[in-house]
Image 1: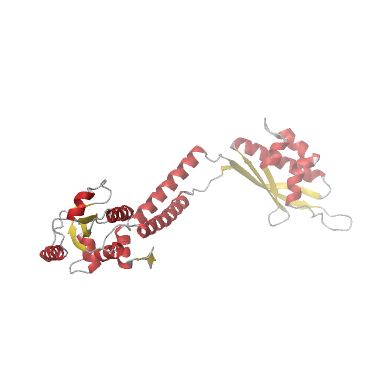
Image 2: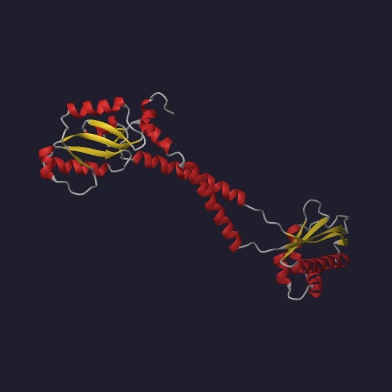
Length: 319
């Protein structure tokens, strides 16, 4: 795999990804927190209106026509419509409705359903006030009982049972919101992590640095608190002497315009900080040095992470 003609070091990429893997659980936790806060804020700002349901059951005893057939052609839709459409029912309902209610209230708040047995009707009244829900339910029940005693299609309609108004419970979706935030946050974290690692143009490994810039790496200076081993010091000294880098002036990307006159006489050693994303600045600096006739004798990687390099080279004791 390559990036702009440069071989992409898969092992280095894996180790860099592993170093920053904490981003994924952190993003997941952040996503869960954000979704929880948003859900809590929305439910607090726009709470569901409290509503109450009063339910009753009525038994319908159908009459028979002249041929002995039962008048059983009423269904749930018919009953819901009849409550306000048939004067024999609606007039009685209007007489008993509580103050502030009319037939429009009945149309919007009352359902009359035949659920399984055509002889059993379920009347459900949903209202924001429990007392008013029960009053509307009573008015509808009385009207249906009266209708059963007057309409030729029925022997009678009688009230079987009635339940006091109960608060309608609303499901709490907090858990769903948190899980959604957790999943989306983790997905976003994985995407950002892989994108950041892939587009990272910093130097980590001397071999990659040499391939990228075509210059020898004179040595690697580990960061403070991670002093180089005697073997590393000896290797650095040997490379420095072999490449004739003594007396060369150190230059670093992003530190302003260097003294090209001095550099032409002494030569330059490019110092690149381990893991610092300044690849484009480095390429620009090398281009300018070349234009000015400055000889770049090599590269020194500074502030390197010994633990990362130990894991990369599978050195003894590395984890």
